[in-house]
Length: 346
Image (cartoon, rainbow, N blue to C red):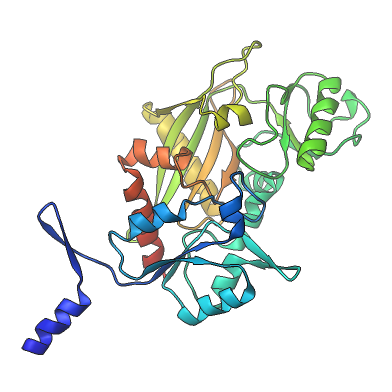
């Protein structure tokens, strides 16, 4: 009997919180970081989610015992990670470059049977190129704006363009509205050429040109509830003040300085429409555990798929705000929920 009592005390470390006993989880979690995540304040190509690793550690330490922050700066570090084989890797890193060799983190973890918090690398291939994601939507009868891809000097004049003005021009790859500004809506060929060249020069990217949708803008957080095997859609409306031309553009400067306003979606019909569209898009793009789907209305109020983010930011961005507004989750609850979901998906 004494042996059983000692065993129980060893397995179940407990802490007092508001006079309640909370049993901690012993499953091991490693939060990955490297030099790039430390040095770069802006996103780097190899970083999908900029994480405050110390904050994540502090949050998860409240419920998990075997948790550590691990710096990965070499292939040796990755091999040591495999030897430890944690139950979960919490990371926003896409890939490492070691000895001129690119190692995609989630591919590597899949190869060694280690679980992680987000989607598979193959799913990112579906959304990294915005045109590819839109093609998937079109093939499955999901409404999205007409579009074409373009690089400088590819078209000779307005008559040669596949679709009519006004057009919305943005980089073919990348996120956070980088490359989007007040000149992104173009109404003639001169404006079109100027914006395409600007993106090519400053973002080193081809462009996607799409029919401009003038309606309201939404972002729908998607959270996969592993226990119930269901998707939870969490829509929010994003409002941006009109510019001198009356256009509401969610551009890089607006996002960077938090100049937009976020609202709950109170209209039950719109709520249902955009939630169903977002969940369908998430499934078609083979999303896993969590993500974000961006949607915009046309002038008639018909929702259209814009793009998807399967590695949405985990600071105080749209994904967090969608959790807060729709599920009344605070930041700690969101991080804990994502971790438990991933652990239970194994």
